[in-house]
Amino acid sequence: MESKEFINLEDRFGAKNYKPLDVVLSRGEGIWVWDVDNNKYLDCLSAYSAVNQGHCHPKIYKAMMDQAQKLTLTSRAFRNDQLPLLYEQLCKLTDSHKMLPMNSGAEAVETVIKCARKWGYESKGVADGQAEIIVCNDNFHGRTLSIIGFSTDENARQNFGPFTPGFKTIPFGDAKALEQAIGPDTVAFMVEPVQGEAGVIIPPRGYLQKVRRICTQNNVLLILDEIQTGLGRTGKLLAEEHDGIQADLTLIGKALSGGFYPVSAVLSNEAVLGLLQPGQHGSTFGGNPLACAVARASLKVLLEENMIENAEKMGAYFLAELKKIQHHSIKEVRGIGLMIAIELEEGTSARAICNSLMKMGILCKETHTCIIRFAPPLIIKKEDIDWAVDQIKTIFA
Ligand SMILES: *Cc1c(COP(=O)(O)O)cnc(C)c1O
Image 1 (cartoon, helix red, strand yellow):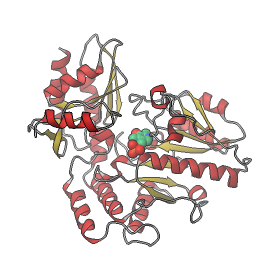
Image 2: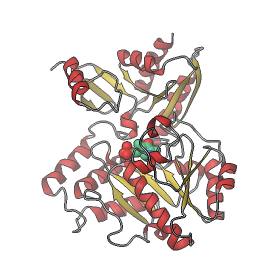
Image 3: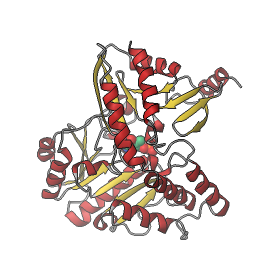
C-alpha cells in the first residue's frame, strides 16, 4: 500500500486528535526510522523521549520476547516473579524507598495526586476535602480530566469541563511565587524539572534547590514529573540531580520501556506510598510481568551502554553546533542534555521548517507555533549530529 492510501485511511476512520506530519513509518533501528517508501530519517523526537534507548533495541526486544513466551499478565491478584525484581532495581537505582507501577504517564500523575492528597489528610492533618496541590503555568502532565483541569493550555481544556477542584497554578521558575502560594491546606507542589511540551523551558539555575527548601520548610510534598526529563534525557538519570536534590515523589514513564510498551511508575519515600492500603488503588495491567521484564531491560541498557553520559556529551555538542547557526528568524537555541529547542521569531512557522527538515531526512515536531524540539535517542553519535547540523544549516541558509 502506498503512503497516500495509509494517510487517507487514517483521515477517514481516525479521530483527528493529532496532526501528524505526512510521513508513514514502518521500520526503526537505533536513531533511524524508515517510511513505507523506504526513505530513511533521523528521529529527532524519540516518541517524546519514550525511545531514549533507540528504536527496537535488540536487548529490550529479546527480554520482551522471552517474557512473552513465559507469562504476560497475572493481575495483581497474584504475585509474579518479575515485579519484585523491578521494584528492587528501580528503588536501588533512584534511591527510593518504594515504587508503584502503572502504565501510562498520565496514570502515574493521577496516582501521585491521589497519594499526595491522602498524605495531606492522614499525615499533615488537612481537613477533609480541602487538600490543595500547586502546579505551574504551561505545565504538561497528561490528558486525563483531572490533569487537563489544571492545564493552562486553553486548547487542551476547552469544553471538557467540569474539572476536578483542588489545584492552584503559579508561574514556572519562580520560587517566590511558590512561597507565596502555599497555604495551610497545600499538600504538594508538582513540577517538571524542565518543561518539555511547553518548549524545553529551563528554569533559572538553583530553582529546584529553592523549591526543595520551601517545600521542606512548609511540610509540602515536592513531586517531580520526570516522565520526559528522566532516564537520561537531560544527561543525568533524573534531572533533579542537576540541582543535587531529591523529590519526595518522582514520576517516570516513557523511556522506562524503551518504547516497547507503556510502563510508568511513582517513586517515593515510604511516608507517602506507605499510606496506601489494599483496594485503594490499582490497575489491571500495572506491574504485569511483561512490562516489568521490558522495563528491567530498558534500565539495564541505559546504564550498561553509557547512554546517560552520551546524552550529556552529545547534548552539549549538538547545542553548541546549533548555537553557531546565525539566522534572523532564530530567536533562541537552548537545551540541557539531548533535550534541545530552537525557538523562532514570531511569524516564522515551526511547522513549515519541520516539513522542510522531513524532506532532508530529519523528523522533528513543532511545539506551539514557533518552537522546534530536537531530542534524538540517547545513542546518537557525533557524526550523526554533524550530518543533522549540516541539514539544519541548509534549511536556514
Ligand atoms: C508525556 C508526559 C506525560 C504523560 O504521559 P502519557 O504516557 O502520554 O500519559 C506526563 N508528564 C510529562 C512531563 C510528559 O512529558
